[in-house]
Length: 84
Image (tube, rainbow, N blue to C red):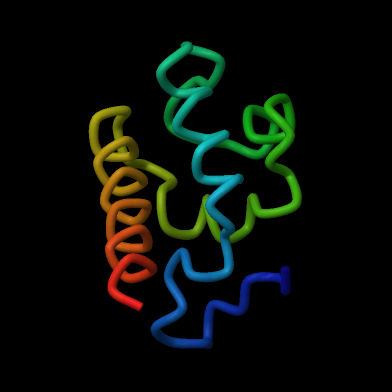
């Protein structure tokens, strides 16, 4: 995964793989992450390698909002892969 470039438009969470998003979602449901998201929390659950993208787009959101975004991204990816 490439480091986050805030000047690159339209990438959103595309660089973050499904495994990382599922790990994030699992950690949220289990209560392993405190919110708002921060680097130490993401590192504790093994997501330091994609923390730049996650923090850029999800920092400051509450638990329900982060869960909603992650579930929506995973659902869109699944629908796109099934349409192929």
